Image (cartoon, rainbow, N blue to C red; front, side):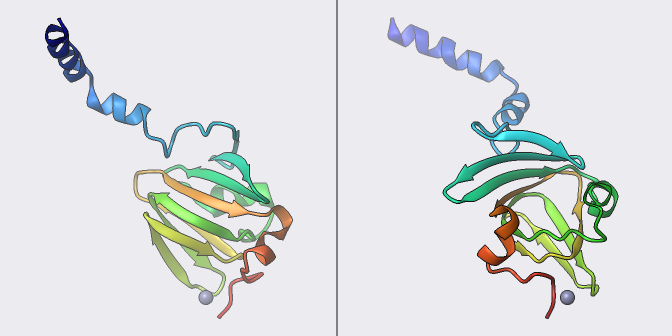
Length: 149
Ligand SMILES: [Zn+2]
C-alpha cells in the first residue's frame, strides 16, 4: 500500500510550477512575522525588536533613488542616518557629499555613514537588514556623525 502511494506524491510535486513556488517562499521578501510593516518613500519596512536594538528588514525597489523618493519625506539635503547591517540581496550605490562613491553588492556587510545619497542598481530589489538604536544609533554603533576621512 505504502509503495503505491509514493509515486502518486512525486507526480504531484512535478506538476507544480517551480517559479511560483520559489517566489512564494522567498524569505527575504516575505512578510516578517512579529514585525510592524509600513512603506516610507516606496521602501518597504518590517521592524522588530531584539534586545535593546531595532532590527529592520528594508526592501528598496528597483529604480529607487534617495534624492527622488526619500528626500521629500525627510526634508534634509542628504540621508543623515547611519546604516549598519547586511545587504542580503541586490546592489546599491552610495554617494557622499565629498563625491566619494561606494558600491555595495549582496552579500555584503554594510556600514554607511550619515550624509549620503543612494540608489538601487539593476532590476532586482535591494534587501537590507539593519540594526539601529533610534536616536542613539550613531553613538551606540560607533559610527561617525557624518562622512569624513
Ligand atoms: Zn569621502
